[in-house]
Amino acid sequence: MARVFSGIQPTGEVHLGNLLGAIRNWIVDQHEADSVYCVVDLHAITQQQDPAELRNSTLRLTQMLMAIGLDPDVCTLFVQSHVHEHTGLSWLLECTTSFGELRRMTQFKDKSDKTDFVSAGLFTYPSLMAADILLYDTNRVPVGDDQRQHLELTRDVAVRFNARYGNTFVVPEAAIPRAGARVMDLQTPTNKMSKSSLSPQGTINLLDDLKSVEKKIMRAMTDTDGDVRYDVASKPGVSNLLSILGACTDRTPEDAAEGYAQYGALKKDTAAAVVETLRPIQARFAELSNDPGETARLLAIGATKAREVAGPVLARAREHMGFLTS
Ligand code: TYM
Image 1 (cartoon, rainbow, N blue to C red):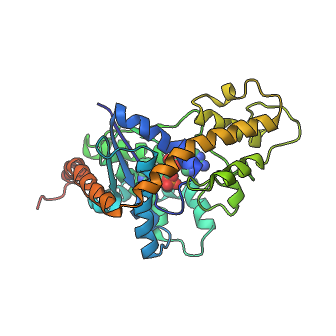
Image 2: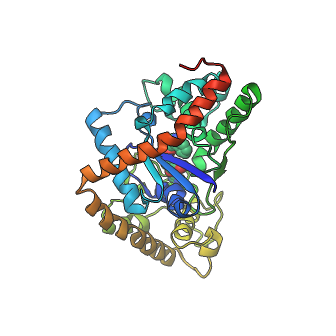
């Protein structure tokens, strides 16, 4: 059975981009593959976090993933810092990644431009991400389009490690969806929807009040030519709505465009599709968030399952690299 691995950072609220670009596919994959999903708290500290807030966000994000449909009895769901193998392998991979490769990462450039304190961890982050993936002999990594470059680096590092030290790692493939791979900000549709966005009107968080979700979509930036078609370069706003509508209704953005003669109807249907997607998630989250003890119990089981896979893979990498066994 194929192994699937993916991760998400516990920073800020989960937004529509996270759902449509990644998590939605995790729900499907868990029934078709041996699936491992990780709340990547170690990645979150590449930027300074308030400790109480980090603890709270880690728990809430886990509850949100379960509210969306991840079933810890079916997949492996755990917190990255509970499985020490991640940091153990990441050092080996940092020493197999070049400075030049890390310097070319566009996410590093974007994030380091926005902060005064640029941690060394922010720079070496892709090596930790490669460790996350390679530790599980992963075949497929369902992510949004913004992670493509990190995935390519992971593949390059795996191939290099295998060439230097003998066959050690499975070389993974990225799985990027047709619709929803890059959900854009509703007000500035040339920027991706993001947790760090400065415009609350441009971002839909999964726990947003449903009335305000509707309003945000009805007020989304479009253009003046009135033609409904999927054309990201010249019609970014309309294309973003089509991509959201397509992802929520299991169609390609081109198919979702069929039959619309004006923006009003497109916005109305997109708003309705998003509201119907979010409503059950919000209801389930409200139930799950009442029982943090149960969430912690499930995470402990997830960490044990994860370690069973990660432990032998790290041991294999250490042995191939030439470390004495202790
Ligand atoms: P993160 O936490 O930023 O995002 C989680 C997932 O959501 C996707 N995503 C989007 N998809 C479509 N449109 C958007 N606007 C949008 N914004 C975010 C991301 O592509 C991602 O799939 N480095 C990763 C976390 C990570 C990881 C891993 C992922 C750490 N280790 C190993 C896969 C495998 C990140 O920061 O994702």
